[in-house]
Length: 308
Ligand SMILES: C[S@@+](CC[C@H](N)C(=O)[O-])C[C@H]1O[C@@H](n2cnc3c(N)ncnc32)[C@H](O)[C@@H]1O
Image (cartoon, rainbow, N blue to C red):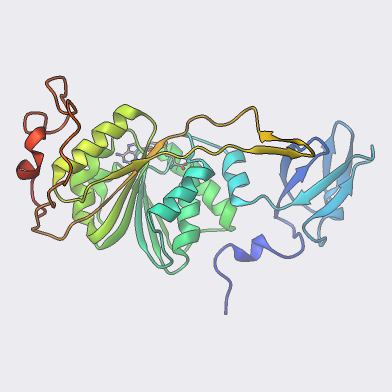
């Protein structure tokens, strides 16, 4: 049985063309590509790439200045944080949430926009696998080029499940019977008609947005659209810990904010979204509220459009 795309480059002894991540005694990382006859230079001496070619991962190399470096292949979370970027990437902590909470399964038909630098595309491709489908839409040709290079370098060539289209999702989305749609863009609410049309009944929309205003506008627009169930919204915070003898405590620094995630499921055609059990919080849709469905928001259950 042939290996899944990219798997052969993730295990076994180091080969020419592999990415190598070195860790120095202070825990700093350096990444390079293995080439026959080349040397890796540091301010404390150099060592030949040939020392690593054929060596197992986890080997230690010493520079001419006798400094030891641990050599491993970068994992996908390392790779996406060090690869060339066009737009800001989805951080690994959020990519993990997308894979789990958007229920990305092997063989799934997935659509994604925008592609940016291709970070989320790679996590999605590994999850859908060679027999799934990921169709990614990106409005900027220059970002699409960066993403394609990053993806092909990571997988060692084109991925059989990946299609990349340059253009706005809402104008170009041509796929049907889509299981999952992931939006990472400024204005996800502009894509709801196209997304609703493409998703299978029970399919899932997941949006990743950076600000509370985008979050509110997207959630209200999904409710107003009337073809989705009640959206769920959340964020995750990851706090690393320092663990050393009696000094066991959270790190002093952390990534305080990346973005918010939300999900909603596509209803079957022709059904009314079920009534929300809870009344809106007092004042939630008061006279200061000007978002989608502003006038009818208090009585939104009867005013929403039905799925068609
Ligand atoms: C934050 S970046 C995406 C980052 C990407 N998910 C990653 O992990 O590397 C947002 C991208 O969405 C693109 N974009 C914004 N609106 C779009 C639309 N309607 N259709 C397609 N792409 C869009 C932008 O050009 C930008 O590259």
